[in-house]
Amino acid sequence: MRLQPIYDIAEICAQHGVTDSIVCPGSRCAPLTLAFARHPDITCRSLSDERSACFVAIGLAQQTKSPVSIVCTSGSAAYNFAPGVAEAFFQEIPLLVFTADRPAEWIDQWDGQTIRQTNIFGAHVKKSYTLPQEYDHQDSAWHINRIVNEAIALSQEFPQGPVHINVPLREPLYPGKDENIIFSKSKKVVKVIPSSFELTPSDKAALSKSIAGYSKIVVVGGQHDAQEKQIKSIVRFCKNNQAVLVGDVISNLHISSETVRYVDSFLGQSDDSVKQSIAPELLITFGKSVISKNLKQFLRKYKPAEHWHIQPSGITADTFQSLTRLIHCSPQNFFEGLQTPEKMESSKEQKKENYVQRWKAEEKRTSRSMKNYFSENRFSEFHILKEILSSLPASCNLHLANSMSVRYANFIGLSVKNKGVRVFSNRGTSGIDGCTSTAIGHSLSNQVPNILITGDMAFFYDRNAFWHNYPLPNLHVVVLNNQGGVIFNLIDGPGNLEEKDEYFITNQKLTAAHLAGEFGHKYLKLDSLRKVKSTLNDFFVFDGRTKILEIASNQKTAIETFEKFKITIKKGYEA
Ligand SMILES: Cc1ncc(C[n+]2csc(CCOP(=O)(O)OP(=O)(O)O)c2C)c(N)n1
Image (cartoon, rainbow, N blue to C red; front, side, top):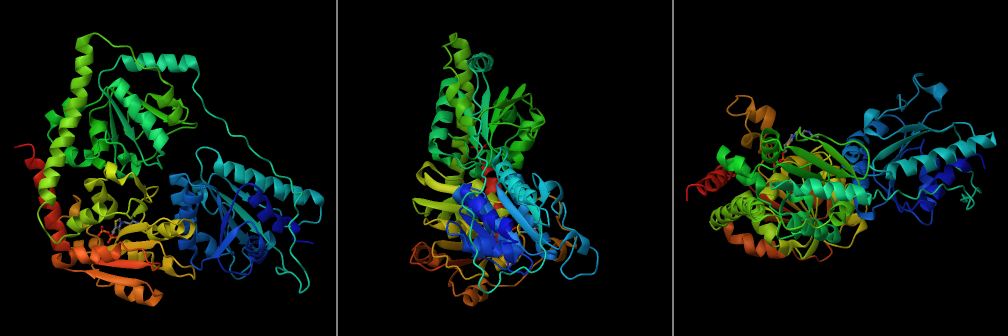
């Protein structure tokens, strides 16, 4: 069969452990569509909006922990994958991005749905391949097989990420009436045994010795999907070495009671003397980005003598402008492998202990101020969100949209009580364009409750996330509807510019009720303090229906309550 090498792409993917595929409608991609749709070991879903589809694929890949293949037709369809591809690149998510194309001779010939697709995603994919367009010679089939094997391996190699495969396809694109698609089971599959990136005993000894020379050590976890075992070894390391563990809400380190989680709040309101007293000498980091701008600014200003970053291989970002050592191993291997330091002279031990206590005092002070602040019964999006985070199911995925949703949640923090809560957020590019779609990708592939917290702009931007025929019984969405982007009222900059409302906040009057109605989802509205308890009780019942809870917020209250929050944290220093 002429298209056999193309059909076999699905077989190669399946043999590499790809379980999920998303296909966007089109004709040029028909051979790929049929291959993925008919493959018995791949769950293939159809989504019409390519931009949303790519973000959904991110969610699926995060859940399945395997590459997800996405397929679209030629032309602007391919370009619409781009925002999701960039997010996947920076969040290091393995995607196999197949774009169908016209044969090369038809590019730039005023043919329909034809654009320049070679390298279309530029620097935001790990590599871009183009498959051969003729399959007459048997080496062409081998060539296609080789590229697909290589692309799958590359997507999974650290740092994981999206790989683009452009597929020029010649007509006829559809099988004949009596033609069956059969997958060749004997296809060549190149398996990769991944390297374990272990530190050698002498590396471990040298690092342990260096660590022992420091009395002020801070470990910061960036965004990652933390595993309990890994966190246990980090906490043990911190205890053994009197190191402070800091993690914002996307680090998933909330499951340890030792984690300093209010760093964004107190670094934003404390003065230089406090900051000086907690500045580290040795900073150890792992994971990806941190949310807190206050933490970034603090570490950039009070530069540690050394900054070590731990990751299995490759280069890393110098986020705090102080990187001195890149340690190539897994965080687990690093934190588990280092020797327990011997007890030192008591003055040094005391110095270390004092340093840890300084941080603990800041955390405690902020915790007290927050308790005080949230004890006031107020109808504000910030207060309601606190209530929602306190009512989360024991085991769930929490999806936080950009921008105030993830920031509010970071200020509020999760506690050890939320041990079973895994936090996800599109912090690769921090876009508002695919937050709902990514949460939906998770909802499609797991059974646990998925709770998405989003602002109105992010919610309405990504409304096509709901535009498909797959049920989402375990997705519950909270829309903080303050009728625009309140972030622009809360950051320094827009201030009182006369353009602020129209060009930054972009006031809008939409309600989520229509969208919920259109897609048949249950709509709940919360507009008064009186209804908080009963509405949240209703919202947190998972009865098989997708629920959308709209919080009737507004810019004025949101600004006032946030200002008051900052003042309360600051006042904590006067008490
Ligand atoms: C695709 C994209 N366009 C523009 C932005 C810039 N941006 C950041 S936050 C924001 C407004 C978000 O408003 P909303 O979702 O209502 O959340 P709120 O600020 O009210 O929390 C915008 C436009 C972005 N992050 N991503």
